[in-house]
Length: 473
Image (cartoon, rainbow, N blue to C red):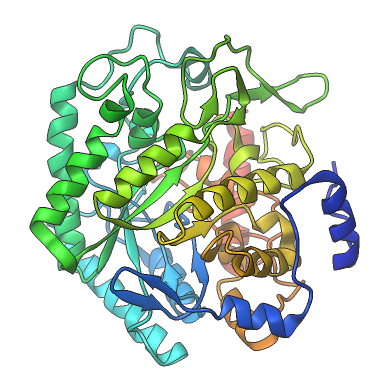
């Protein structure tokens, strides 16, 4: 189903005004340049512009968690690209917290590899951009929880997510004691990140991974479930321990999923995504309206963000949904990942959800800079929407995810021309997601990238992955 058929910004604007309330645009290229060149204060530092690269996993580490050849290539390209916030991808805090066999994992045996990679990024950015004092590279720390490889750890039982992930109803949840031990492992990983030269870390609390799942664990018993105070206990303890040990040497950031939504599946007749049957009131999830979980309720989210800010978080990256059970929420797309469902809504509606939620949160906390998500489907017009949101105070920073894999130097083109190159911009065909899902090679994971726009490297990988998938079918 083709949705993106716009030849001009005016065509897109007309459709956006018909379908949405929050997707609006700045047309003047010079104004786009000026708005996205705005500096952003984050704690005691100032970022050199309002453009960010989201944490995009390449699934290309060595089996012992070291950055491999393609990791180095990706971050060299990002470092040259001109964005002043490069959010380093999800890096596991322990081996069994990895989402796949080739997810990055920082540990005492490979910290020097991360130090060399970080040093390379600073060197390359200095060569390309002339200054690194206004560049921030937070390392995203994660435990993949329910999606860990090879052993899954769940925070609570949501029957809908259990069904999507084939999780047995009698699988034990992670204990309070193990969560308490894990807190210290997050601090250990932060210590290694600081040792490697990273001046900031991010707690990954999104996409259904362990910390994100804790946020929705309303029916969990014990110290880490039930009340909002309990569900945020892990984050409070970890942030407090990091502040106590590292002080101002380490900036604390968070990528927060602010609306879980409801798990979806494919309707076999229409091929569209449809929500799984859910009870009312809906007793699970985070940021959802219990009486209509297809809608957000940000009451608890705002309370938690206020606490995170008190506990030391200086930069928030706003995210939605889960790629595992409702990918259209987090990543409005033109073409589904192979084997997944077609968009159940016009992608503009999904973009509007991103913009609406981010704007409400940013306006509630104007002194906590936030990074917005959900721009890639807009293709070349993403910059016009971003400029509007920045101008209106609806977001502090414009973040790009998939498009950075296709177009790592997008920020330079915005700075120089106030627009993107249509021949290079991501078309949201989700080939990168397809590659992330492919495990059937000798290393247990195919690396992920952009086959359409990085053909020499990822074109052959895509062919190999499709061949392997056909053999399994």
